[in-house]
Image (cartoon, rainbow, N blue to C red):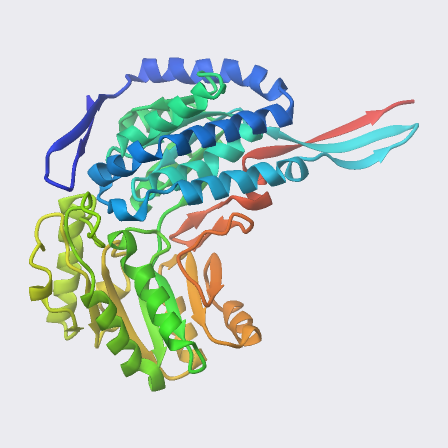
Length: 457
């Protein structure tokens, strides 16, 4: 079998790679497990230095990586790739590693030594998505390696070159080749390895159905799992908000990367007094976008990663309009619309009976609703199967925190959106998944506590 990347730019086959058989994959994992013992025996500072050298080596490839990403998943080259966030996240995790992984000493007396250590799981499988393929992967790869795990990276079929690039960079910088491996696997082989207890921990970022498949494969194995499965993230604009900043940030959060972001803004609730002005400003922003070939520097909105993704959003939008939603963006402004190239759309007169306000869109469409007050906004924000982030717009931090306490989500932003702070735990609830990445919590999830009770006399 092969993994095939069909480019959204022109529908051509951009890359193909053969998948490993089950026995070949098992052998790769066995090699990783054997190499991990020597890796964890290295001093922590040495592991940190090697990981950060790998990160720098990825940065040195950025001029090649940016057009590769455009070809693989459609993001315009004008945005310069992902190295800024990639480096920020890895650097922060390197910075906190000593404290996050430090022993917890309970007693060290003449009679007893009692201490809790954090030890690696062994081999960590990272299943990474295509939408932010470098940043999502490094969230787990960097802390897993720093903590002393070996890592097996399985990247999405839409971005097959990403795993190759990362491993080449890290191994070239000195990380042992068996300690960090890139593999191409089909779903059956991946599930079979998990069911056979090949891994000490599995981190998956992707769809809800993919997360269920991981959980089912791991059932009864007691393998640790981290799942980040997407969202339907809301924004709420209050009467004291900086309206221009709210519109600019929330619409960018809805449309950037053609809406293909797990923490992108997919629902916006605006207090009634500001609703009309918000919509007018939002429409003006979107009308200024240029949809086109992502290799052209003037393009601000590239194609979606695959035609089927674009068609799913088209169907969702059409269903909403048929049910009474009002579309504000004129298709005549986006003559390139078609295939993987999907024009952006703003919808009003929407309701939570419509799939566009309930199901993950993962595309350049957003519904905007007026709300009466905080209670009404909280009710609507919580009326979702997902819970990844929420964005609150007000000048009153105490009010924002009081609202945040009532929202069922993993992260709450005030006066910003669509950002991952590596100092905070990246987590979610409901169908968004389980576990947490980055921050001190990320290290806790990529290791296990081990207690030592040593009686000296």
